[in-house]
Image 1: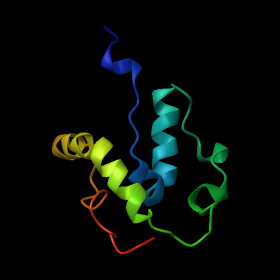
Image 2 (image 1 turned 180 degrees about the horizontal axis):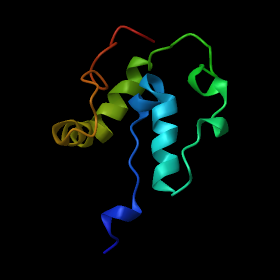
Image 3 (image 1 turned 180 degrees about the vertical axis):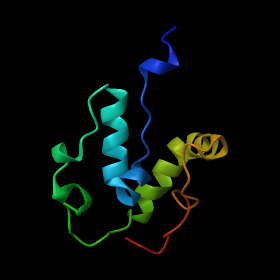
Length: 93
């Protein structure tokens, strides 16, 4: 079995909330000096500035069927902290 210390888990929500903090955590995990000189100013700025578009209802239904149980399990363990990843935005398309 691979030891837990060999894994780094970063949440997608951390990218949006605190990208500099997440990058600093990755540096520390890799045992790289977490020097802010290496983190450019643009890290905290969105790189994809397109407007948010929801998942089409037919595609969402397939994804919910395939991954709904897994999302619930991850949410229960705290690995997903967004309550509305599945079964919302049903009117979008």
